[in-house]
Image (cartoon, rainbow, N blue to C red):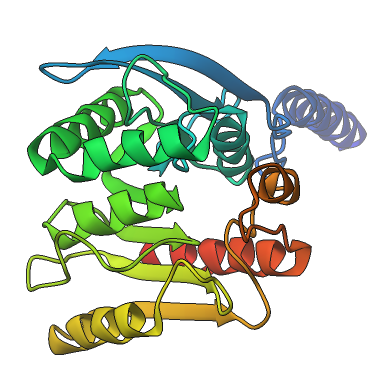
Length: 278
């Protein structure tokens, strides 16, 4: 009997040691792998419509592995400059892949408001070409490995706001569109072709945007039961999201002014729009 108990004790020790060894070798199932930090990668990209060579900039988190929504950003009337690239980087930090587009061709920039006006008019007066350039950018964005092609949006500033609103009104397949200090008297007004959620953030004291055009724009949106939000910031002028607005306003004697509060609030509203849309 004593030998039997001794044998059982030894066997128990062997089993215990074996189980302990296995548990030490097997990682705990509830351990969470460490997330990599956000690593923004920005790349210049060359693309084209049928008639125009275009120079853009795409930004994304290179450490993220999951597919994410893609966002087009259309520049102010000055052209594709550092400002629109900074906004692309900001969207990439929020978890999107953002493409700052070129609507003028060859990365062309305006040095004076007269040139900017001519460049902008050349695009808005030729909607087939404007649409082709916008669609070329969208095709490039969707071809990026990081983008979920079922989730897309477009935002724009000043001239760019008018572009993205016009594209949305013409039936572009977008989940959300946001326009900042943008005119709303558009070549194509809202109709049943509109699919996107709409956000417009403007300065209430922007002299470039008439009260009549706002009324007509809202009426058109209401007539098709559009999902939209129009925000007007009291005391705020044109180009309120750009820190270069004050200098440009003085240089060219234009009613432009940066407004930090409106800038921050409009960016927060954009994030809310994307959370709802995606």
